[in-house]
Length: 84
Image 1: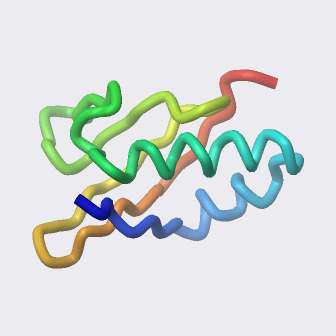
Image 2 (image 1 turned 120 degrees about the horizontal axis):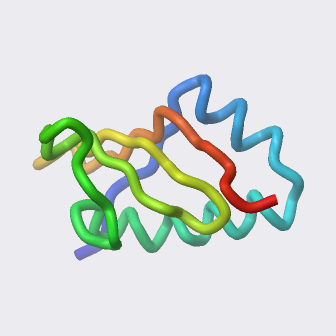
């Protein structure tokens, strides 16, 4: 499986851009792992919606939607730093 494409909503992209380089790099590497299997990787659904999920991703919690099949996109809508 080649994995899902990663996209960012504007608020999540702003949070990503506000991270210093080492933290951003750790987050994007961990997100790439999650994008291979967005329903696994320790993620859990939000409010019982299978495709609306959250997971610890490196130094942050990512809230995201999974679009598929055919679209195969993980859209990150919120990033909350948990480690500084």
